[in-house]
Image 1 (cartoon, rainbow, N blue to C red):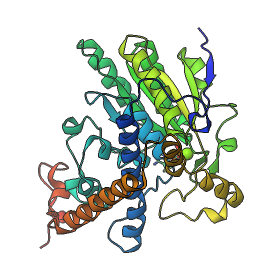
Image 2: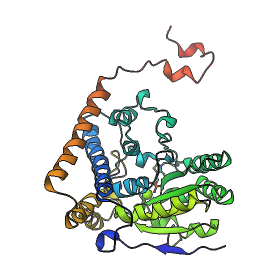
Image 3: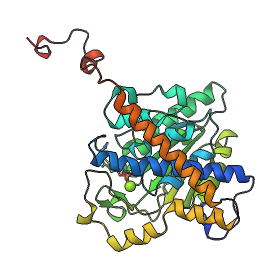
Length: 337
Ligand SMILES: Cc1ncc(C[n+]2csc(CCOP(=O)(O)OP(=O)(O)O)c2C)c(N)n1
Ligand SMILES: [Mg+2]
């Protein structure tokens, strides 16, 4: 059963915004994007100041993260990769929890059931089967909960991606798979990753719908996610969403993309950056004033200031924790003296 792959238009470039979004909804989306952007920009600074460790930058991925999750209910689950490390912010998770994680502190290991946000997944694509399993399990229990997994273009070449999406499709599990196609897997370009013309095309092989969407258009991402979530919740099974953009920042703070990336393309992409593009849309629509925009930014900055202060005030963890769940009887050589 081959399903049509749809190409979605950019809403921010003039098409009608998704139905049903009120002005407060549009502003809440903006607040979430600004919070994510502020978290990301401050984290790069904190890294340079030696206050957090190596950090995976998600600058210009905010439209995908905010747009897709805005269509979820709080009971739905989010499965993030390292690229979506701060996605718990949209559920009200304190900034310090995520900063703890990037500081390598155990206080960054939140209980997933507190937020319905799974642990940050660093191994590529291994959380795709987790999301499929959770979605299937919820279905077996008769709960109408949706699981949404985020992963990159490179992840679609991994076995775990295939196993997870195929399993979810076969079980008709209420899962939504969101591929952030930033066209790079560290220094490997998409052309070296796949012969597929689009990653959404891969959905055809699993017999599920695949959708391509402008990853810098928060409303288009929202619209695609809304449709996929509604389908999943009403028993229609999973959807693969490919959100297309181009990575406009280094892979992580340890990366120097000048060795491989197309600098002119990065400049183009930065000029279309997603928060400013949405802000311009809101201003044109008469939804956002200068005062409101300044207040949203100030609140996000305050959250980050409080977050880093709380993270740095946390006492250092007990080194014993390294062994707590590893050994019943630690070998003598692990002890001093
Ligand atoms: C199983 C596994 N293999 C290799 C790596 C090393 N690695 C870290 S990030 C990355 C690139 C992933 O690219 P993509 O899936 O496109 O996600 P992006 O970083 O672009 O968001 C790789 C190969 C890893 N983390 N896990
Ligand atoms: Mg990528």
